[in-house]
Length: 85
Image (cartoon, rainbow, N blue to C red; front, side, top):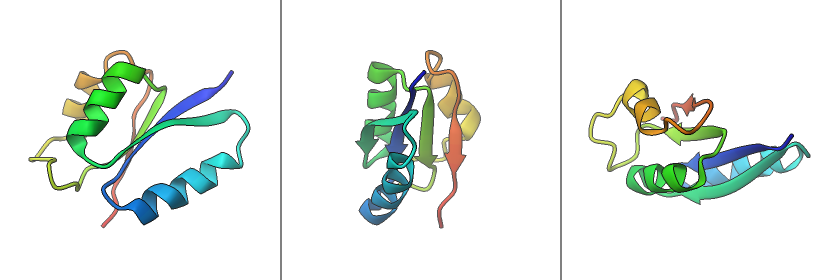
């Protein structure tokens, strides 16, 4: 079974580093990358990835908590939070 992943971080270097790490795992597939919180929510709603790796410190985050993010992603099976400072 392939594990689908959405990467969401406003830093391209971080997205690339995490993506490169995941490329080495044959059962993991990065299905999309987002550069903003809004784009991440749109892609997650549309693609329903199994895992979302989300930087909660993006500019358009506006105080959203991990619990609120999870409630927006009802169709996704899990949510991974990555806090990058």
